[in-house]
Image 1 (spheres, rainbow, N blue to C red):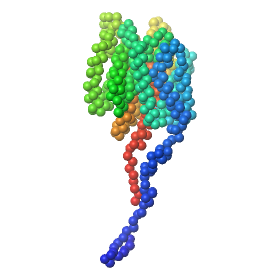
Image 2: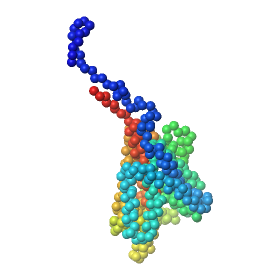
Image 3: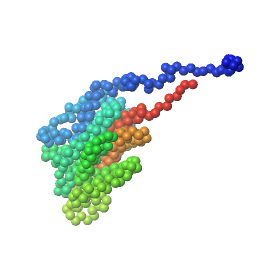
Image 4: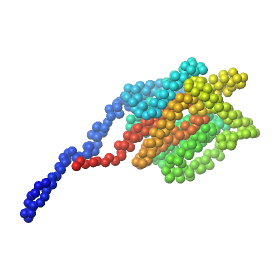
Length: 474
């Protein structure tokens, strides 16, 4: 401190003043917008090869989810091998542009790789080694690769949105296919009849219902986009209603469990306004759809709750036999899991093993796959494979749920909607899988990959959008 004289002649104490540079105090955010983008741009994001691989990945996802190979086979009468035009480009591009590092940001990817590795380890212990080896090879070539497409190629939110839209558009193609090819069998159950030469992956009633359970939430994401034209929303809403009618029309009790699970999840996680809207809309939709279902389908779905102890018609007898067969196969799958807990009876070998085992016991045998994806994996590949399978799915759900809660807290409506719709797809499909032999489907690694992409890209957007507190230096 020092002293100086004022204008009146009296001494005045003085203190030193800290002088800050105006240039140093200027925040980085005052830089021009283009300059900031150049500074923050990752070279991988602008890599032309990565972009090419990403669009090839979009095409691959659309082709598989839209069952395009089956549709083209129906109209052309031959296998077009269309996936071979885009699938290898997407996978190779993912590897060459550092996509593997992006995939393995989550434990979900490690768990799914461990699942595939355990399938390979289980093959030498299979009851039919040659057939298991071929099944594992086909799974790795056509289904396992979907683990790397979304998580390895999507780099920003625009691309994650494109992935969600692509599956939604695939769902619209599925609805059109259902409208063109869905027929009722002798019991009234809807299935896809695309000609005797085409055996599609969703031709079966149960598989059709499960696939629609998966894609309808993505159509919902298309519909609830902020600013969407009302007429498009109505069109997409009617499409969702038609999809629900087809699901019920298949008579799939597993899909009915999936619908109930989705309804409970909506009530548990939605906002109060959304809950009120759901409670108003759900009874109206059911009142419109259930009366137009055949009586045999309504009875079949009702057996999920009341059973059929004394069937009095052919339809009731068929339903009772189906239920008894499912219960038997489930018990056998649990039995084989306990008897072969490490490596199972061999990938894709439950039906053959059950039939041979029954014959050795002097019985006829069922010779069908177990109608439960979880015991399908455990009985064929062992308990470790089941732990990897369930663990990968649960970690994926947790990732998306974290992003959902964070997006809602920051009022980011689009990321919150995307997370919510993906949660609906995951929860509904996982519940439906309890009644279907779809453990080796491409849809599971695809969902895990999309969950990883949505979480990490969404987190990056939300962190960059959160307010930053600037502390000045003394």
